[in-house]
Length: 330
Length: 111
Image (tube, rainbow over all chains, first blue to last red; front, side):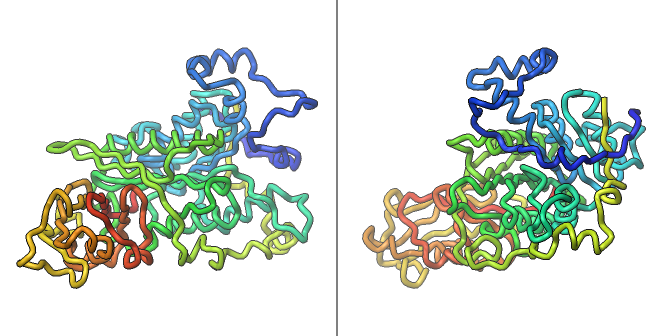
């Protein structure tokens, strides 16, 4: 078990540009080290996968909310792909019934926090990825506080810029998916995720730089009451989770590399265990003109009052934000 | 279909007219010209539109769903017409055409 080191944030770290941009002729370009080249050689050999694509993933900061049946395979794939900074958040502890489908955990991990164990495991698999865990429930307020703590040198008159390039919501909580959807819409952060119960599920990916006519989770009707909740009642088919996780990762790559012909924003997957064929539908999602979240006149979350001064007055600062955050170094 | 889990009880839709969503017995539908595919949680049904071809365009997505589902569900479902998800607020104003494909799937919250 690697030693847990508190995540030491330096303001300069949080202000580095993380977007994947075209190379500037005058600026020296970062390169992959020989070790990284060797580590990622099998994907660098792929046609249309260039070193700058790998560097783009290396510069990305991604948060995964929920390290369960979907979060484990997604985190594992993203760590393997080489996301530069990967944050895992989950307040739950590992239970015995998680083990069959949550491949990052073993029997000895039962009772320990999911995010922390997953981060330890993944940091040993890819030494080039900076992995941090948060044993916390992440909601928009948590994100705003994190943004503010990271952007402590932002002028008080301005809200801190969002820290993460992409947030992936993979918990089993409908309210959380909607709340993070709203945060991402208002903060212009790319948003992906998936949800699955029994034999069917769906994944999504939204980004502010895509078609402005695209909708959000509210537009597809996700805010209506869910008929019957969850895997606790209906179970979940393991191959469905891996299929959805693969689709999420494909969508994540498309978002981070800003692929011009991006994949459809919604995939619906129906995967019966027997008697029928699996079905994967790629679906477009036009914006609902009456959407309470993303329509032009929709009311958003209030980010104006949350800035460095407000955070300071409330007693929240970078040091106590780090209490539940652990980094797993080499 | 797992009806315990799936609240969308698909009544096999024999015919739907654009005006009253009721079949017109005197008019024989032409299934290959006036039918559309309704896929509910992955299971395909055929909805036959009992109307002249020029009138089919006045049949709304909401009419088709009401006719096919019995009553419109109040819980979270997504409806896609020809692979484009249609917001619930647009169901009544969206018209269907012969050979359209409608996908309905239940939105779930699980991870």
